[in-house]
Image 1 (tube, rainbow, N blue to C red):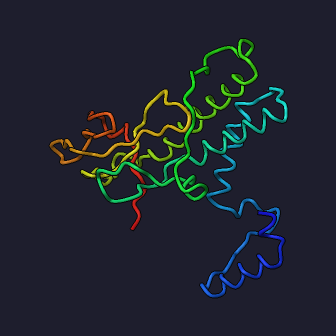
Image 2 (cartoon, rainbow, N blue to C red):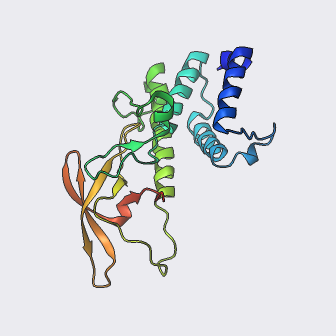
Image 3 (cartoon, rainbow, N blue to C red):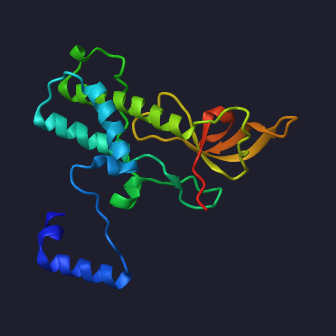
Length: 218
């Protein structure tokens, strides 16, 4: 990144390409993170959970660097929208696709969130922090996706073929459970409150309170 920014030849090539494509860069002024909008809100949310998880723990530089790298992977693993309109495709777009071209993965590990930190090795202590941060932040993110207005306002019904995110407890870090709606079950008022879902491991029924719809892109 430094090489691209500070080398004159790289700067000239970028400027030439941007001019040909009609690209204009609009940067926020220094010392004005409140003008950053949605990405600064994500940074604020992650700092909040990171402070709660780390607390007064004393970490070495290597431990803290490892923790931040894993926290970055957690943040960039969040699903944004389905990758295609194909109902058989459960893949979703994540910020990781813009960084490495595919979704980010993590090695599965035993949960240590309920263990006392003085019983753990230094590595396990760092992993415990990651797991606790994942639990707090993913719950907060899913809750925001699942916000519902006052019940007197009718919301759009779920549709067959929609890719949704399942609200599941005790998932390991970077694991987002996705499914496709294969059937809907409406009441007498023609509102859908229960759906049948097709996942990678079979079919199941869930109430609509346990699924998160992705934002519709027109």
